[in-house]
Length: 166
Image (cartoon, rainbow, N blue to C red):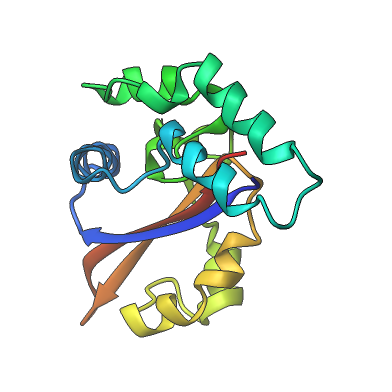
C-alpha cells in the first residue's frame, strides 16, 4: 500500500506532548485513520487490473484473517496492535515527543532547519503551510516533526507532520 503523509495544525500549548496526545485522541475518535477492514473493498477495485484470480485470492485471505468482520478498537493501543505493521497512516502512529528524530516520535526542527526553511525561528502559519512538503522530506517514514507556529511573535499553533504506514 505504501506510506501516507499527514499533517495537523492544533492550538498551541506549552506541553507539546499533551497537544500530541489530545490530537491523537481526536483523530481516534473521528475515525480518520486506516482501518484494516478497508482492504476488503479494495479487492473488488483491483479486479480489472491484476492477474485473473488475484482479487479473489485477496478477498479470500481477508475473509480467512477475519478482516471483513473486525471489531472496532476501543482504544488507540488496541488499534495500533490490530493494525500492527500496516499502521494507521495518521498521527496515531506517533506515540510521543523526542528531542531528536526517532521511530514513532515527533521531534522539532533544529534552529538551522527553521532558518533554512523559513528564514526565521518563528515562522507564521502561511510560511509553515507553504513548506509542509519540504518538512516531510526531513524525516524517515514512521517519524514525525512538529513546528511551533507564531502570530505576532507569540506561539499560536503547533503543526504535526509526517508519514507512516505500510
